Image (cartoon, rainbow, N blue to C red; front, side):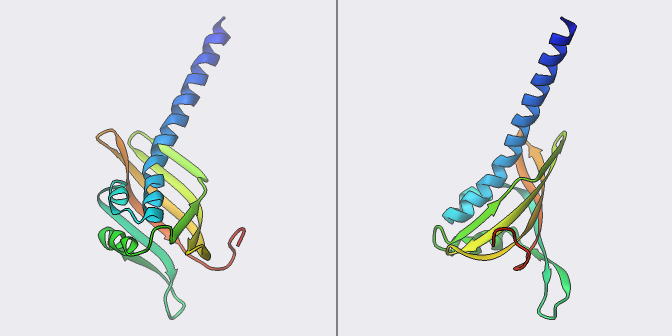
Length: 150
């Protein structure tokens, strides 16, 4: 009987952890749905106040740099694209949660007007604000070679 209760407790903990992971995915999915739809309101709803966006990429001289991008400028630039033009396809590789902080690692492939553009990895840091997960920080890599399924 004691083992039965332990199994029920473990099952409950696993179900709660899976539900919380799905909650963490919600703003990430809204961001990419918003990009595909060119929906600025949906994209804005994904971010925490003062969120940050950075990219690790090579500059024109071939040097690796970290480039910061203003979230609002990013959203406005996406709004200029026609609906369906921007399609970032992600896979959830790792999700870590501690209290009101979550870290999510998502390899991706990016398509522009249905043509492959580049791939890389997104690293998200999310915070739970007023009971909802919001993206606080994104840093990504971008490359054209070494992409799975290219």
